[in-house]
Length: 165
Image (tube, rainbow, N blue to C red; front, side, top):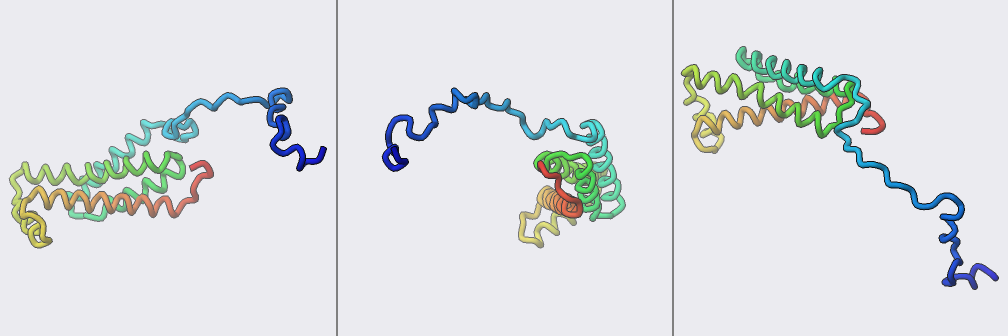
């Protein structure tokens, strides 16, 4: 019987013989989320300590007037992530939180200390936003987050990606 004559007939394709050959249905692999990979080179406590130190450095630099520090901390986090091998989804959220916390603390401290926040409100009003100090503070934190994520992107771009990322 030729192949053309076997088309459409029962058993013509040999798919039913897979179980008899020993390559039957395989068990599905257990679900393993990517954020719990075991190939991290540093424990999570080291990363948390580094992120806390980054937020403190950003806060101290903000008090001195170094507004560009979230970019530097973000790029250092991107470079360190090459060694630590955290997924980008997890590391990027950590950098965003670190950058935001680094600027929120000094801004709130200055408001609680009685600093004039009218200038912040005027800057927000000049940009066409509502003339409230909270809007200016939110804009400042948003700029810090953009700097941190841009720095993280640069740090990751300077290091080769792992093959499983």
